[in-house]
Image (tube, rainbow, N blue to C red; front, side, top):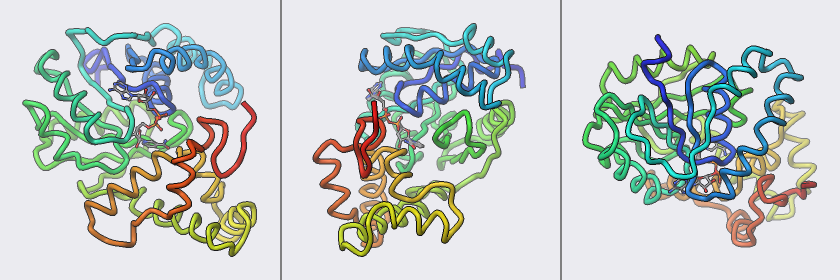
Length: 286
Ligand SMILES: NC(=O)c1ccc[n+]([C@@H]2O[C@H](COP(=O)([O-])OP(=O)(O)OC[C@H]3O[C@@H](n4cnc5c(N)ncnc54)[C@H](O)[C@@H]3O)[C@@H](O)[C@H]2O)c1
């Protein structure tokens, strides 16, 4: 696929996911703009980019030419007033009202060629697509964290998504060197439908005093051959995001299997959100 077809790409939300998606797309030669409604978040993403890129190069994840392409292709927009764009990837907070408002605003301004994608972890793609006038050009593109390192991309067509949009996004994923799985549009899709109950149960085991956080993580790492224990992974994802995903699955699947653990709720209430705030289940140096 010709990279100019989807360029420029606009990424909405400059948190951990938006920044990673922007970096990945720009390093593969796409012209990318990253934007956020919070100026401080956008600044933080811009300031952290050079350090992240050189770390990824040291780790062999980015080549020297990809790092150069990244610097050339990535721009930061405090306000998104652009009139042309081939692809929007929304990576804002996991909240349906926020995401719907973003799409409802954008679809009036952008040209008919534009494809709208959401990086939502759990919300209905079909419902989000109802905010735009061309739901056939709307799709779920669920990247994994950290985006430059993780090979998987879950693609979720909504009820109205066209086969052209799906095949364009499959080809885009290949250009990003991602392995694609396609999921039907059900809450949590594949990855979070399986992962979040495990994370939730790890919180319950901690809350019930069955074992310490370190023992729970070590048990799952060594006992089930995972690179990271579920509590450390929850901190990595963001406890607010984990809670939102569980709430959405609990409500939309109407099953108590997904009812969020009270301890998880408490951590979020205390604003212990994980790595991004310096404290979650564990404490991190900032
Ligand atoms: N964290 C993960 O591991 C992970 C993995 C896959 C998908 N996701 C999904 O990606 C999305 C973002 O998650 P994250 O971890 O990057 O969260 P985050 O909290 O790091 O970042 C969210 C960003 O969205 C911005 N934002 C909020 N409202 C906005 C608006 N109206 N316009 C523009 N920007 C706005 C916030 O200022 C913030 O910078 C969520 O939908 C989440 O479910 C997260």
